[in-house]
Image 1 (cartoon, one colour):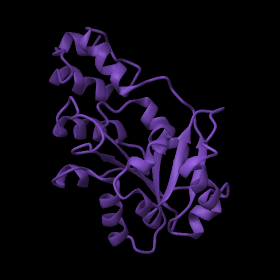
Image 2: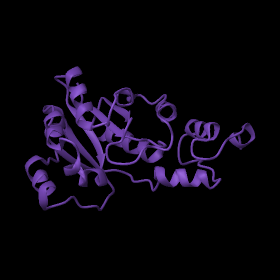
Image 3: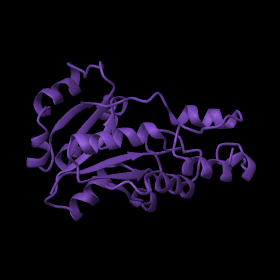
Length: 220
């Protein structure tokens, strides 16, 4: 079967930048599915603004109806920091013969050597680096060496081996960030068209970013 994409993040909130990246990679790399993994306790940053229940509801609302998009809440159910290597160990136990593809942005990839047990990640999965057109991958240091040793430009390599490759792929980069969305909402701005309407509705109804909603506001 085709590889499983694993797409983690705080999704605080999820927006079209996340969704478009996942959709393009699913199509281009022929992934059987993309599993959205909302982070419970981020190990490398502060706590999310929205609580776990709200973030999970937003991810479910955003992905509903899209074939191949699956929401996996295991990191929220697991105690302690949400380390990617632990999640991949879980998935590898469930799918011992399937190819796993961990999807990260270029910024996350550049910080990979700071991740917990980062070298073990490539024993469990391929790493797919989504980046904007024109960006260059590092060509020196530990990541440069890793790309030389593990890098591939063949999509078939992701299908023929269960793990171990690094595949760098340009995707459409929508200039949307979760931080900017939160700031916009806190300043009484409307996040319409930055995310699916169902996600906007949750944000306005819960007031999770500092702005309570009402029916008149939601339906404008």
